[in-house]
Length: 308
Image (cartoon, rainbow, N blue to C red; front, side, top):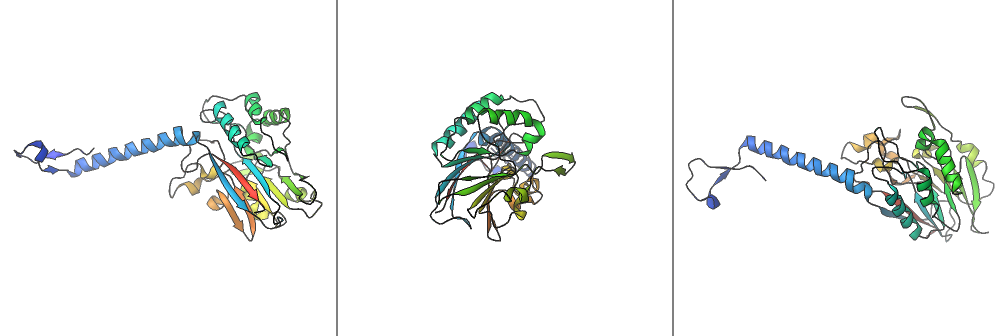
């Protein structure tokens, strides 16, 4: 509430007194309101939005996909299991929500564990993996690895996924589906797997080698943790699915696009992307990275309906 002054010498009752807002008090009040607003936004970004969960739905028939070949796909990206915002109850909620979608296929796009530059509450591999083990789909549950998996605990993540029998696709492709409705599911190795220095990485991805394993004319779904591979993806691929960016994670107007973890800035930050009739969908992901906060990009599970 503004700090108001009674006009000097005014003898009227306070209820009817003329009021004057001085410039100094106005600036102080404005600064205080701005501070309160910033604090409220910060509290929302740190305590409320990361704990939410939405299901973002897409329905499309991308180029190369057979018309009428319906396929439903649930996509879980960037789980980042661990405190403060992706503790075991939230992981359980993610799995419950994904399971309720009852899709034909479930895909996990990497970055399974959280890591921050300060002490947080961990979620043990055996615990988050046990939750993911509850996922089931007629065409299987498949995964790729992300940069955090490679940088911080590759052995632990591999072991956890192997323990629940979730196959990890690394520069590999598998043919799925019944005869006449088959499609290829291809997964790339991570593009940022090895840190070489500031802004320099060596990846484990092999796009040409992966596509060389595709032996029929059936449609192709490509999984890539980072969306930056997209300009190199040929139109042989019907749809590329990616994560990594968290949709920008904290979308402060005019600023957020400069901090998207992509060499292309906001070009591939989030959502449906179409370039030269090639299609990609980038998930906003579920957890957080570097800063345990989200603003304007609530955690999401992506649900696709193809062939509509």
